Image 1: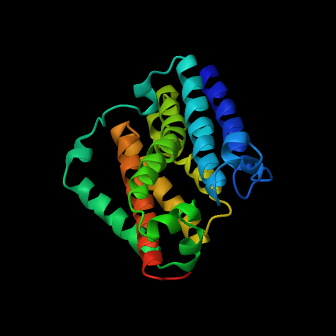
Image 2: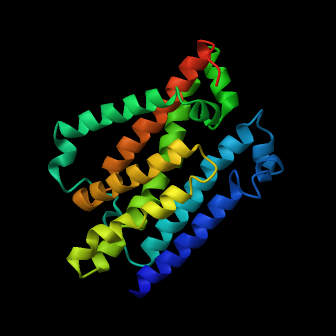
Length: 241
């Protein structure tokens, strides 16, 4: 239990730093004074900084800590899913469902005004620079959603399942990550924060079932990027929040 205790402490500190450095944290103005980020236009400093901090504090630091403590990549969910659920027709259906939820979310005024994170980028894409959207999607997936899933569904679930001898307690252990993964949405629209509770429950079940972060990553990314795409399309059509 010593190494899981160290992992909890480092992960907690890392999550606090991520939360404080991004809106609505008290240091959210930091990107405007840092050399690289302040050279970007509009709200792109905050956009790039959010992705950089998520990659660092939710991905690199906890993942490196796990490796130094002796966990393998597979033990934190960086593996091919062990259960065939990922390869059944149910999974594509769930992916399509997440895309539809994302598109429908663009009609929620609070989500429409909050997303995408980079309004400067969104305006540029909606004005016709559609080639920028795949770059946004790649950055969103690699620098934000993968670190997010590594942290909440990998680091905060799988090591504790392996070290927990009481099999009956596994669902409860997995569901604990639902608390921080929902609370970190503080400042986001309440519809999203409440949705994060439901998704956190389902993602916990997926990780216990498959021992991999990739199924929950696929669904999470599909939902988030489809929401951004739908909002940008509506912006191009002249919709307002």
